[in-house]
Each structure stands twice: as C-alpha cells, then as structure tokens.
Length: 240
Image 1 (cartoon, helix red, strand yellow):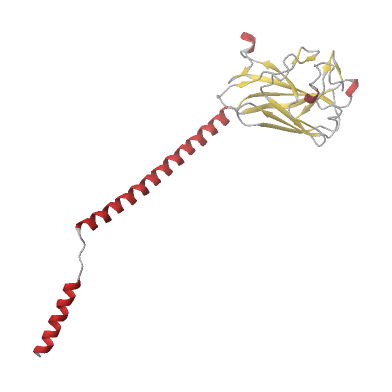
Image 2: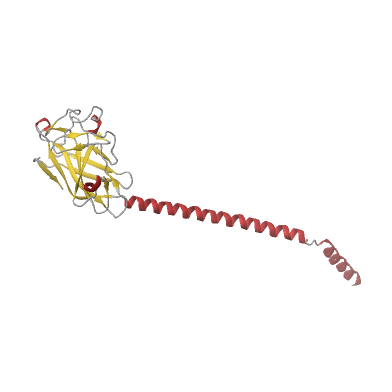
C-alpha cells in the first residue's frame, strides 16, 4: 500500500515539475499584437467608409448637376417644307425648349444666324449646344441650328444667349441652307465653304420619314426628339 502511494506521489511530482507558465513579457507581446491587428482593421474599415461616402457624394452632386441642366421640350416639333430645289421634303424643323428645373443656365450661342430670309454662318464653330441628326441614311453630328427667343428673356436687354430659368427659346434646325427664300443642295450658298458637314446634303426628309434629333448641352442630360413625317407634307407640318 505504501509503495503504491509512493508511486502516485512521484507521478504527481513529475507533472508539477514539467508544467510551464506564461511570463509577463509574452503576455504583453500578445496584447500588443491584438491591439495592432485591431488598429489596422479599424483603419481599413474607416478608410473604406470614408471612400464610399466620398463616392456617394460625388454621385449625388453629379446627379444634381445633370438634373439642374436638363432641357425639356415645350409643345410639338414643326417642320417647314422646302422651296422648289428640295420640293416635297422638310428643310427646317422648329421646336421650343426651356429648362426643366430652376437650375443651371445653358449657353445657346450658335455658329449660324437667320434674318428671316438668309441663313448665314458668322461664327463658324461657335456652337455651344450640339444637335445631332440621325435617320436611316444620314448622320450629322452637329447639324446647323439657330435660336429665337420668345416671351420674357434677357436677350433683348444685352444679347444674353444663356437660357435661364423661366425663359423659352425656339430652336430652328436647318437640314438644308436657305438663301433669299430659296432652299437648295448647294451647301455653300449661304455659309462659307467648310460647313457642308452641318447639313444633310442630298438626303430628303419626305413622307413617312423617321428621324431623330439629339439636343446635347454642355452640361446636363440629352434631349431626344424622334418624329415620323405624315403621309402628306403641307407648307407647315405639325409633328406632334
């Protein structure tokens, strides 16, 4: 019995003798490691949150800018049939625009001018508003256009060509040039040589003709106008 107790005592003595403890230095190193990892993780989370917030703000600001500069179409588009040189087809398309919201003004400076009889090009390349014409046969990235103001505007006060909130402007898109009341395919008849690309040339907007106008301001969304001409073209064609 005593021998058995002696063996158990020696066994437990060996267990206690081989047990290892953790020193204070090791504990401090482990704590420091935890703190460093936590700090790095927190910094990563905060950086990602700040970056996401910044991108969200940029998206909101860009969206507001697009909305503030958006144009709207007022009423319908009106086509004007050409003279004998381009008979039975539309030579000019008019439509009225305004700002959709009380936001950013839009510059309507144009390269072309019309005095009621002649279409001229006094400021080549001066277009601030780009209007693209498209149909199945022709694409004109920057078609000729002029502007006329209706109602109350700042234009009469000082030749202000900015479309401001509350103002209305009639945009005339010229598919063919006009000189002295005569329309024609001679693209240099009213404008200097080099502006041929601003017209549709030998193409014709005749009956049942589908076309698209894309009005692109410097800032803001694009205004798309798509119409199909009727079966009969009068002198003035109302395209709803």
